Image (cartoon, rainbow, N blue to C red; front, top):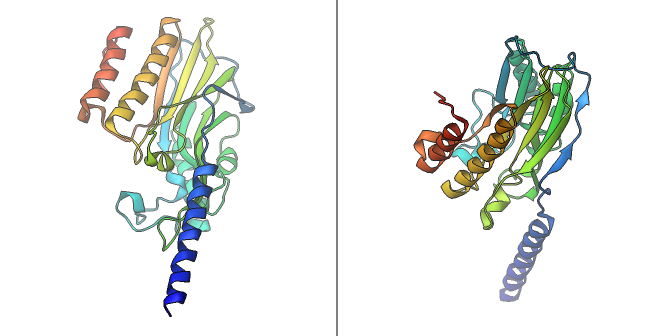
Length: 278
């Protein structure tokens, strides 16, 4: 009996070791400065100066967040969406809600393309069926190997990103990698970034749209401050070129609740000569 127990323990340790090696070896970060390829047929060639535009941002929550959904990493119970049908319904609902305000530009976060948690539904493709007449830019900001936690319903493998829609032609787009934790928590914070979409304006400048989703579970205040500082410095460079900058997304935290983050935003305002109320 002792031999059997010892053999079982050894076998279990070997399995755990193999799995840990699989996760570590599978880990990789997308290189900073990746060029993104816009796709689609927008309805306008450039942004006009004497026109009011509507820009909307929304975190689609991987299509899982029905009213009764509670995510396990937020102290809830579920690690997957309720069903394949609920994912389709939630994404359709999000698209229709956003379209109801007739937006010119849309910034979506947590759009899964091939994830266990959302039944491998390509939400980018699903969203595209709603946003005809828009050009789109997609940047991967979360890709992970198969995660075995929680044991009752393993979160599985994930591939998710930031999806930007524009009714106006996007001349160029870029993916900028954000600072993340270098410790074990990096395996929970794959692969934070923001996308930069450049749209021509009729005065020869550019409207630069930033779509961002900063760290939550794997980040410290120091990491978040570094991320916001990088983002605001990038925006400031574009602003000093004479371009128009708009940033939207899921920042995961209230700037005013974390002094370093609030200071980073204020530094940007002061450098740009602006006073932002929100």
